[in-house]
Length: 265
Image (cartoon, rainbow, N blue to C red; front, side, top):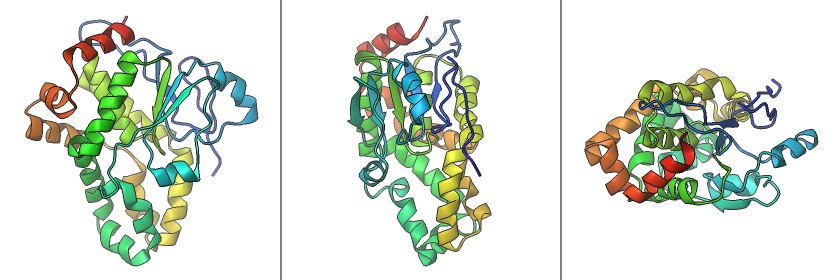
């Protein structure tokens, strides 16, 4: 299977990172619009074709926030645009579920025990709960929001597939901006059409795990139920989304105000 080429909202074609996209353009409940060209989400940025470098550098990216683990970053380091600041920002502790799935898949016995018989879906629910409550995740997503509100733009944040760690980060920012849930969910689910690159390496992992590809598909896609799990965990632990932002993430009202001033028309 080859890499599928996608086009961002501003016309930029990025064949090596099919989940690269602008989160601008969404309407808020109050009728405002999220500005385009300031905040991008992506899958891994380790490979940029020579013919795409000029366009990539021309996007005006001044910050990259990389959610990947040290192992992921070391294996496939980012291509950083000219003049951009690169920040490795952890959102998973070394012992959390999502941080070690590749190691588990490398051992067929462990892979069958963890991911077989519906285990992959249960694994994904655990990942999303931890993204809401784990101390490392809380610190990492706070840093993302603060960088988006106060740091130089444009900013791109990403993980490996750009769907889970990045998906929760995008959902968090869009909700803070006042985008209604149906549109947040649509942005989240759009990753399913942009997983060509991810599916290649996920199928390779599946081949070494002794599991059928069908057993691992829940890990290669996003589902509304995953996002619902995170939001339910927010309400369970913090009482509300506002409680999660203020108490869990420790985000000040001023930072939220600055984020809206910067990103909303």
